[in-house]
Length: 138
Ligand code: GDP
Image (cartoon, rainbow, N blue to C red):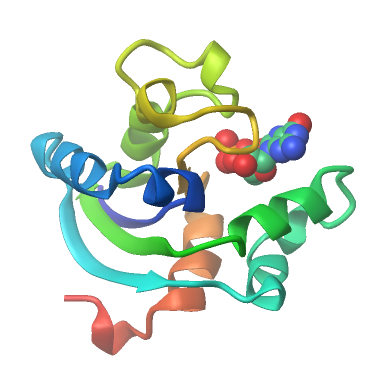
């Protein structure tokens, strides 16, 4: 099934100048970039985005990290985009991620792990409109 997924190039990867390399990888792997914008999230926006994690012990640290600098938010399109992007990202902890995944290549720690990707169709249905109105997805 052709579908959209939300990706975020997180503040750590943005700071380290990995934006272009990650975008090039998306194109190389056959994702179409249907929307993209550089944003600096407020703490409130980061908290709203990650609200499913609000009871987790790392919620405060995660949301501060996500609001610590610019990010790039993207809508990626491909056959099975959600799962394909999760595979390309690799495990949450870069130390456990498969070789050549984005988190292995660009992540530094379980928190500063370079990229976000929707983990299910339900998440994508919440996350995509969180950043993009339908009219801005091309
Ligand atoms: P993901 O779907 O692979 O991004 O992982 P989760 O949904 O479980 O967690 C969301 C994000 O929270 C991760 O991408 C990390 O940035 C961060 N995170 C996850 N687990 C931990 C943890 O144990 N400690 C810290 N500090 N951050 C974490």
